[in-house]
Length: 260
Image (cartoon, rainbow, N blue to C red):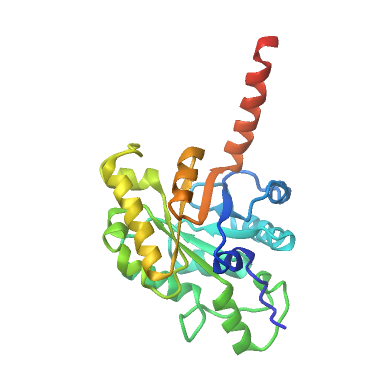
């Protein structure tokens, strides 16, 4: 029996299912993951790029997420070895890599994430990512390579220009559109309905479909999320835990406004 925990999100994607998730940007209490799990989410992305989290928080949230069956991902602050490898050692089951601008950068992320013979990740079992178990080295390196998930964010012109090559790289599982940052890099800040941005998203979906990869999006607009789900996207990430709390509170208080 492998000491590497099964990645529920990756299993669902392999089966052809769509998965839903949200970003964690502020709340470090692991109980928030239970709330999200109860609401039906499949994954949560711990945001180290824009959020408040340190590695101790990543360890606590990842351990609890795995335990209750909501896949913990980490959006690293930069696509460098100390961030990627350490997040995985602490128990994250996937990495979201931001701001990549070339296929070469994507290949380096794969090299960091995967153990030999695929990559060059340093080996340290008996840590959070194995629930502190140890076992046969070769078998568990292979299992870890199989279970880790890589989401490449498509949010730069460079990534878009190399989209077909990136979608062809072994070890890449998901190409995820970051529409706001992509609009900025295309010189169309915030113009999410611009033909140029729509074409970029459609090109990404097409590259994934032709090369056996999954496309996805992170967006704070439910209509847009539904639209792109209907177009074939299967990683559907929206809002953050802060935004979900605000939306729920606003909806209640709008109903109660006439009594105030």
